[in-house]
Image 1 (cartoon, rainbow, N blue to C red):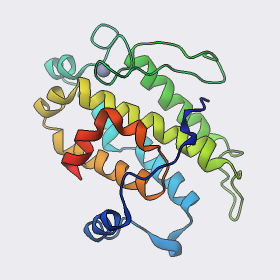
Image 2 (tube, rainbow, N blue to C red; image 1 turned 60 degrees about the vertical axis):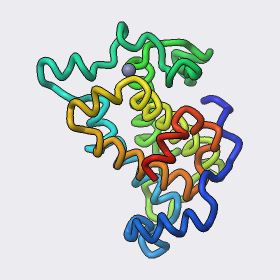
Image 3 (cartoon, rainbow, N blue to C red; image 1 turned 90 degrees about the vertical axis):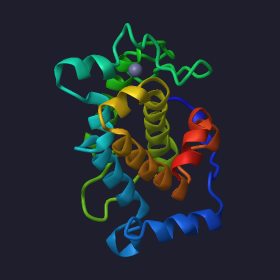
Image 4 (cartoon, rainbow, N blue to C red; image 1 turned 180 degrees about the horizontal axis):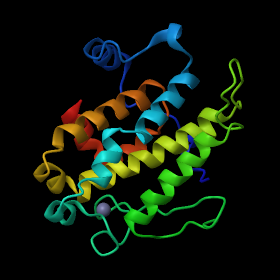
Length: 205
Ligand SMILES: [Zn+2]
């Protein structure tokens, strides 16, 4: 796990947040439905389930469309977000040193890593009233969301026209909008991590 996620900053000030909250009533489930931890887990599961992000990454199964949208070794030899940002994969298994790899390999590793985390009951306790580790938010959730942001950044920089051609622009934008609201609401990702998609955030929020 890398160490870049320590800095916490808000992208939105309180007024902006209140405005977004008014526009997205129902999103903030409030204390009755569960804690921040509960919501984090719920959100991560949603993202990994039938969520549009995964849909957008995998779509589509068709013939020509798969070529348009494909993210493979030749189209995306690095996990980048435009010319200025490249992300290296690191974990506690096969890649203990930050490793350059094609975007599809990075994303596969990321999804596998998140699935493993969620299945690990010491990280994501399932027992009622079980306590999460005190470092869960800074050392697990923040890293998960930071890395998921990189997938969005890669998609916007390298696959946006294909996403539009496949009719998935609103799916991607809505999914990203939800993501940004969530991570800013709970201050999960440092604002500097948004640098590659700063203009996109401004445009869709
Ligand atoms: Zn790609």
